[in-house]
Image 1: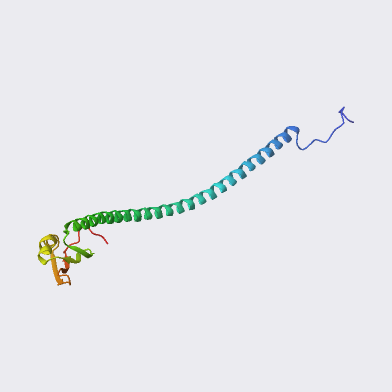
Image 2 (image 1 turned 120 degrees about the horizontal axis):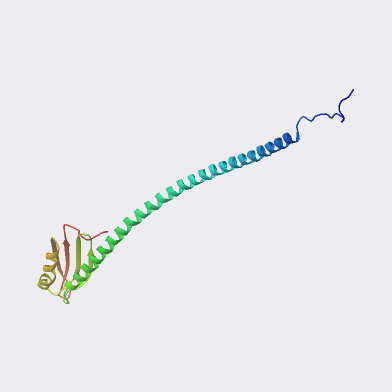
Length: 173
């Protein structure tokens, strides 16, 4: 005897609300897994970029150190060059002054100038003219002055004047 008016149907394991909840939970798990994978990928990418930037920073630091060394070397070379330029100006002025010292009656044949010495070869009409007009100023400039004379065919005197000073202030090689 059957008391029910409807035919009995088998009852489903999951109800429609349970299925909706399960689908929603599965969807959330998929979305969270995708977000987690995206974060892992970004983390890996940032780690690689950090390593690349660290190596770039090291190489740039080395290049900066090299540039600093080159800059320091160039600064020293500029100082040396300006010192040489200054000594060349002094040397030029000294040569100009030397040639201003030489009177018209004395003819110079050779002038050898070193850091501490000056050797002059030339011709003078008499020893006295040389001693009064050129030897006296040279003795006041240099510490030691040695003059030697020799007679030439026309009656004039050839001379060699060797002058030395103890210090070499203002001259560079």
